[in-house]
Length: 360
Image (cartoon, rainbow, N blue to C red; front, side, top):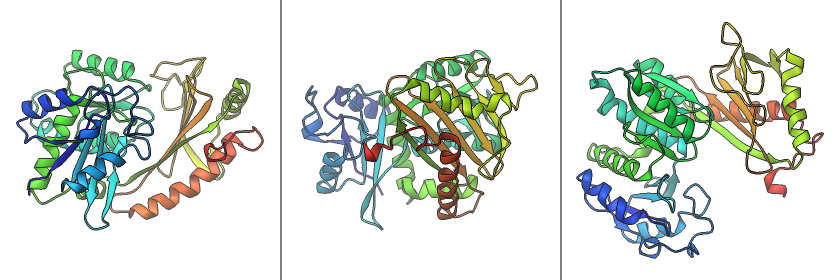
């Protein structure tokens, strides 16, 4: 089966460069979404020009259905991010892949296509708020995985440092659909990523598989990783400081949160703390102005908290790791139960006047 791919530049500059990427990867041409092909500073056909946003790909998926395309690939307007959607024939619906799911697919494909044959040791890296799937994959397959602070200046610096130490860096990514593939550009780049993703699509479809079925295979081998990422609005920096201070518990970091046993704690504020290190000092950089606190739990859960540096938001990233073979629904249920408990215990939203976005 040869898949048909629709592409949208989302009113940005990506179209001619995406065409060149497909040519360089020796791929059949995509079908461009005509209404979004050319630059338009008003972004006339999208509510918000970011492939992650709800409704942003509606125009592209409508075009894809009309033209028999199974896959939609999207760049944001400056073409440094990659969005991916696939038509699921069973449910007759479009599946919009998250940044972590795309990162998982790219990492797994690069490891099997290149990493296993590499003469150099292989490494991948991702921001600390991205999924721990690649970390688990690395432990099971034998490649190095490094975690970085959020933002591609940190991911790119990590990749360059690993290259200097003799590693072949196959992937760096962040959950906000930013990908650096193949160790060529130490920054997020939607153009090289789109060529690689399309190559992967053609490879899997030629085997009678889809991206969705391949992702299911990967999760069966390494375990399901499900996440609950979100934020509360918080306009008062003093409340943020109070919440973070409460998590620190006067330097006696919690061993339990709402009945869930804590395996380790990392605090990237100042002076910094990491219970997994012999000297209790974190290996990642610390910051007084933008601290991040991470709790790892013995049940496979990870909860991370930080204030946004640019908006009045207090963000949380909670992920639950399932056992290989455990049903996704079971992992999702455990995540739901745990999220409610730890958000209430650590953030005390009502007491601190935190506002849920849906009630703004």
